[in-house]
Length: 227
Image 1 (spheres, rainbow, N blue to C red):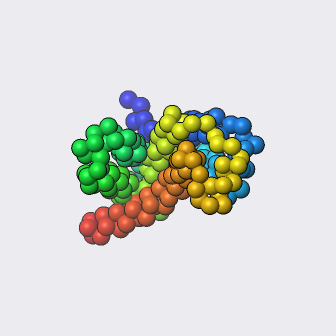
Image 2: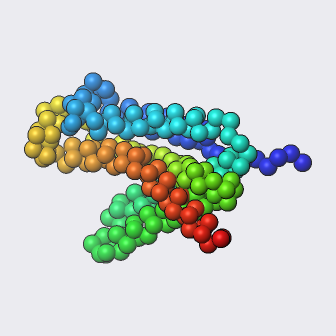
Image 3: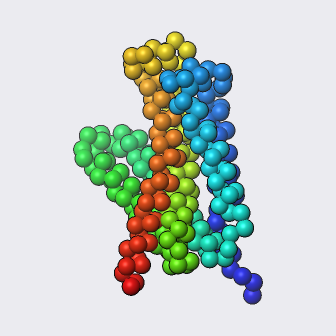
């Protein structure tokens, strides 16, 4: 019987990053107008650069890892996949509750969203703990938390970009963007597009940092409890 397959979701992550880039590129077409976005185009440029960085990190992290490290990444990937589904639900929840006015104006949506974020964070932390137990290294435990968060956040970014593409009309004119940048006002579609782009970037940038912190904390706690 051959060695057990250890899926790190490397190909899945690369393809998902490429899909995100394609959605972003199509949504912001024509690209020359991207520089007219507030902040000299940073809302549109930042997610694209971050996604390219993800692709580079995926190749670097998975470049001939040892068997224990690969096992850690595999566990982190599986937990990250589950965390990604929680984040997608978190993103789509406002739209779901909007169709139910009886609940939309209550505290319930916020509580559910907080619960989903908390559950995702716990999964990232468990990935770090499992990484420590597989390798005995706090560094690999932290890396497992980061890897788990990367999987989740790529899924979350895709949900944000797809929802943005389906619900927000085509790009505003250059004058609309300049008005928004100068006065932070403008058409609701302009504001919604700006917020969605920043939200996608936020998931991609902040998620791995949170995953690293939680992975390290859970690894320390697990090692202390074991001792």
